[in-house]
Image (cartoon, rainbow, N blue to C red; front, top):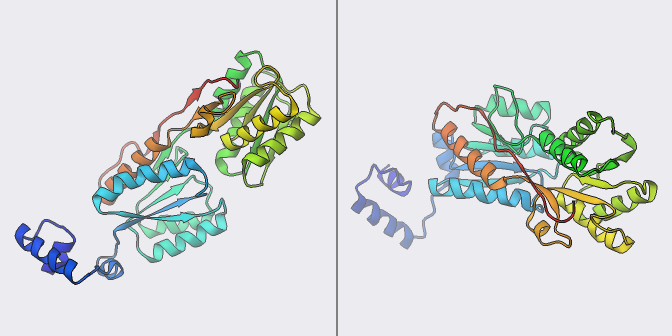
Amino acid sequence: MTVSRALRQTGQVNPELTDKIRRVAEQLNYIPDQAAQALASSKSAFVGVLIPTLTNTVFADLLEAVHNILFPQGIQILIGNTHYSPEQEERLLRNFLSYRPSGLIVTGFDQYRETQKMINSSGIPCVHVMEISDDDSVYCVGLSNTEAAQGVVNYLLAKNRRRIAFIGAQNDSRTLQRLEGYRTALANNDLLDSALECNVPTQTSVGLGGELFREMMAHYSDVDAVFFSNDDLAQGAMFEALRLGIRIPDDVAIIGFNDIEQSAHSAPRMTTVHTPRTEIGTQAAKMLLNLMQGKTISPRSINVGFELIVRESA
């Protein structure tokens, strides 16, 4: 027991004895059995984090922030890539729960009902990220994608753009919320035209953005602005506009979403919505730590907001 406490750095063992035990452990190349510790204590020293993709820097920023808060506390993160699939998310969650994690961080709220039941019945603290909710039964840190999209459209309207198209992909909940905000803002100004909406279930990419932009302009040459559900798609559109001889923003204004690093260096520099992923990850990890320590959390929902970064493309 003394050895266990010393290696776990509980502070219950004399510092000199702790140093001696750790030196012997290093000489023996001894590595504590985390599975055994989890079995004995009914919890482990890791937190499961479920994200929809590993290829998007949006979630890389989030993961880095979570790691920076949890790692100094001796907590590792175990990453699950759901590939935007509720089925994969459910399987990953079952696997995570079998290892008795100390906590969970889950992206969004578009899980299967069975997945939600597993989270609720597990008794393991869970924080949802990238979205917000008024549901008093959940803890979350994120932003209103709907309000952000409304802000984008209102900005374009103020710039006297009237034929505003929407191009999205993936069909995850956050994309659908942005589409909802787009529709609401245009409907409020009697300018909504469903023909100018393009939202496909295909995995998002720069190439797809160029393809969808080309098709939109071929069918609706009077479009004077396009709001893209993310920066990847918008960047593809800007490359395609160059090939087509379409001037950005003189002929068509382009606005993306997320403000990934490349968007500040494109030509022209891209106007986009900045989503504070680092703050989301930091706040979510801190909230989860408090929940794991049995503390009362108020508020349960943290809205970190958003910022429209105006550059040269709109």
